[in-house]
Image (cartoon, rainbow, N blue to C red; front, side, top):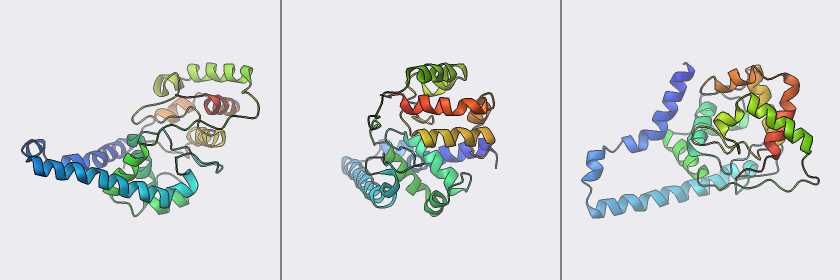
Length: 219
């Protein structure tokens, strides 16, 4: 399976629920049927909110941010990005035994349910550091982010959007591990964008770039 096929499969999975009911059929719904459908959506949301608290919160936190080392912040992430990562875990493309075990039995509906719920989690700022971020390192990190086009895709505030993750305020250790993974080729993406971008970044600059990303106060 090529990365283009993976991206297409993810898009199809995220749209499968909507595609199951043709637009023409939706337009012909009676008020009673429309009301029943609108009532079903909150019910489904509540189910996955509860499943998130029971399954995901132990590592990721109830609000999507925990203090567990190496665990990414989900608060403020986008549903399209979340479903992409769940798909990669389900297919064994991303290497994390715990996440692969959780994602393997997920149906497409499960992936949509979890990712849609994650998409409702508002951003949670990082705890205030004991000391303010080093201004010189932040300046150098910003220069690196601009030089290597990080801000082109993720935005000047690194808030991302849709299939591009919010990385501003993400944990330093997780960002560094992610950058190293893309740099080495161990971390797959649904496109080659990150691998190609990181191929131009010297290894010694990865920690500085991660420092900047983690300490940037996103919106």
